[in-house]
Length: 395
Image (cartoon, rainbow, N blue to C red; front, side):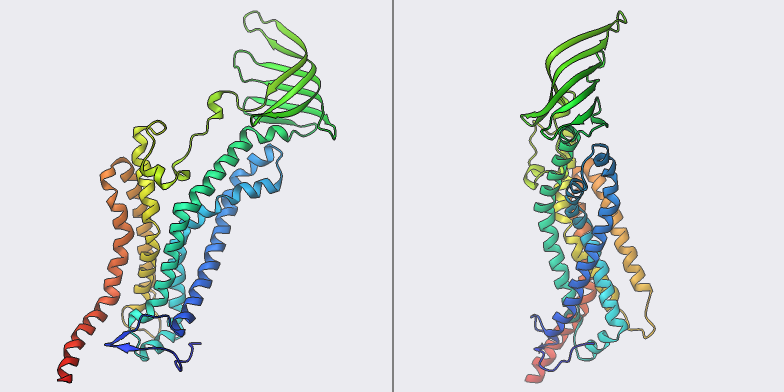
């Protein structure tokens, strides 16, 4: 139910409502923020559930725990929220204001003399909060969390699995090395070790050892083998060469130095690194892609405001209908879908043609400005016409 106007600090000046937060604003804003939190959280959880399935094989194949799986995939959640927040802002503003119209609460507000600017003010507050949160996510949280995700994933692929060897299981610690152990003591001693080493294509070897143990040197996992043999076939003569040893050490990390190098993605770079890329690590053909990513981070939060204005225009503009109007909400949805598709196309084209980067800002800001004009311009025009009339009446 709409709260009573008794005691509400509304103040009308020249047909405009004084710009401070009223009880009615708080009533609508609470609904908007609660719906925004629930919708964004639920949709982010759904996306996390579907996208995390891609990493199940990575974790299961290396014998890692469910805790590691959750820690790895949860680092992607901020990037999901940053993408969907403008969309959920549109959905929430559209839904809440449409419900207010269905319950005739908007009719009561209009009958009380509230102009569109006063009715739309809670939606604008909600959009402002979404814009501020999007900037925090895009500029600070998402790059840091995605960088941690890439580092953690790289560690799992190249280092962590070597320390989690299971008894009686052939463990692929890297694409070119598989390790098998028969048993493991409580003190970490390994017994019955077999290592298939294919890191050198022309010299593939099978290594057997009675026992050994794992150790780390400079974040590189290694297994120290005792009383074993190294067997490999000479490709030229076809003979089996067997080398016995009393002690041998094998690195269980990547197969080459190039595999130890992890190249950073544009998504995990800071805004300063994107706008001023280091020519030593960034190729000339990627400069445009980095520039587009930087401008996307700065402009995409503003789409939350534009999408909210599209929803407000769909609900608050036009004549009131007792039976509802499906055309305006449907047009708003199609407009937002078209803007999202246009944004993807502009980013792809601007990466190849940097001169078109201003179009990214235009797509983010212009729809909101147009909707502001459609919704508030008639009210401003009425206020300007009323001002001379009041002056004449005073004379």
